[in-house]
Length: 366
Image (cartoon, rainbow, N blue to C red; front, top):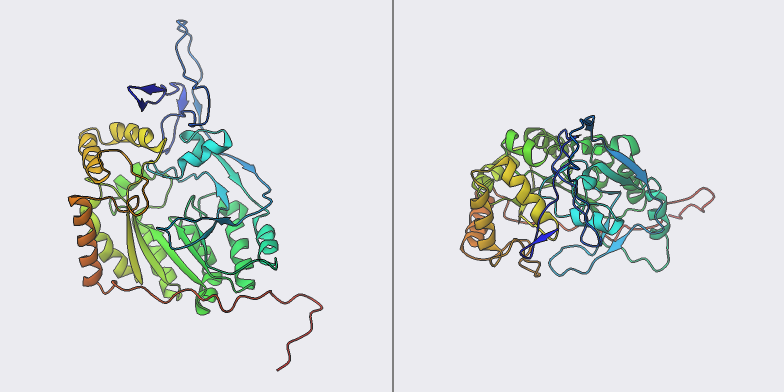
């Protein structure tokens, strides 16, 4: 639905009960020719209220490694164990991806999930191809590999095992404290220089986090996970992402201090990104969750986005531009320097990559 050139959301289903969801509606994706809207037929007949539950379908991919060519990204390949994310973050820039599946970037994105249980086997085949050239793989750059359904599917653990067997470097980004389950694998890989972990902490305010990231672990719990990872020798990068103008930007120094206290080796930040269908969904969330500050948040964001909700230009999409964006960058740099985090750690090792030994292989000669 479009009004004056801007996308608007269809009315919510009044008989659908939502529990801890980031979106309140289920608009059609931008590729769909029709928008479905619920309208009263004039009959005042009560309907039974129903709770929206999470559904999981399984997908068997023919390939797993996704190659990217973005000049402002520090990696050229990614893996997505899942499509959609039950954390339900209201600001998630990955929501439009559900449109490629014929699903909504709204409630569908956080309730109609797709798991890839054969991902590890597919990955092993791809790594074994003669044409494959090793470089760090990034996991968690789209949807969270440690979202709640990973507890049942264990896809991420299987992927890590394959990467460990092949001595393949990997970086992982997550909000999920389920990553603690895999500390044994991560610690072993870290000892070989093969892994870096980024943990996203958007705010230290548990109430705001609960509203923006309804099914993600609380901030204190994420910081505790960082402490456990760093204690096991796993290098962790604090990801202050996204920085939401007015709502969270005042916490930059406190977030860096909290990360330093938990033992992070480095830290980075990314400005709120609202591509495609995410913008109206986030505006809707703001109007309901923060009505008194909604206009201020959006106006400040637009000052950093050239007057629009989002600017996808390389080099600008992560940081924004203008006075306020420059101020955030300066404050963050000073906070890093204050806590000794203004340096990058060693690069992940690629020189160890090799096929794992198989039963019947001849032993190496020494």
